[in-house]
Structure formats: C-alpha cells, structure tokens
Image 1: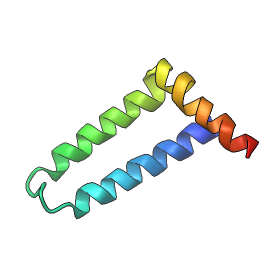
Image 2 (image 1 turned 90 degrees about the vertical axis):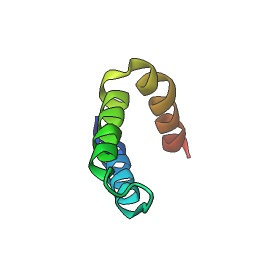
Image 3 (image 1 turned 90 degrees about the horizontal axis):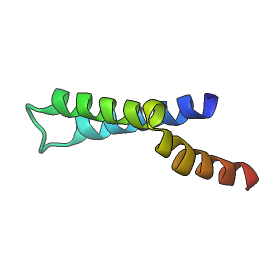
Image 4 (image 1 turned 135 degrees about the vertical axis):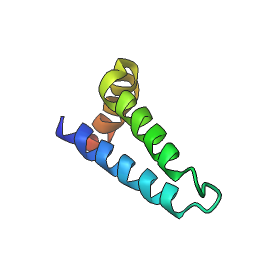
Length: 65
C-alpha cells in the first residue's frame, strides 16, 4: 500500500503544479484540480482493473530492475 500512496501523491502533486501553471485554464483551475483529484482517487483506490492490470504490473517490473 505504501507504493500506491507514494505514486498517488506524486500524481496529485504533479497535476496540481501543471494545472496551476497552465495559462489556458484561467478561471477554471479549481474545477480542473477537483476533477483530477477525483479521477486519480478513483483509479488508485476504487478501480480494481487499474491496480491489478496496470499499477502492480508496472510496480513488479520496477522491483525486478
């Protein structure tokens, strides 16, 4: 679970920085931050397919290298 929390935190932090720095979203940054937060929360904690088929497969590969 530690790996999920670490990658989740990194993904949230990077999208928050990208959303904050983007000039085309002026006036809608809070909306996009909330949408990104909800999408990442769903993917990492509620989507069994994403965790098993994508995340853990990549995590095992990183552990092997």
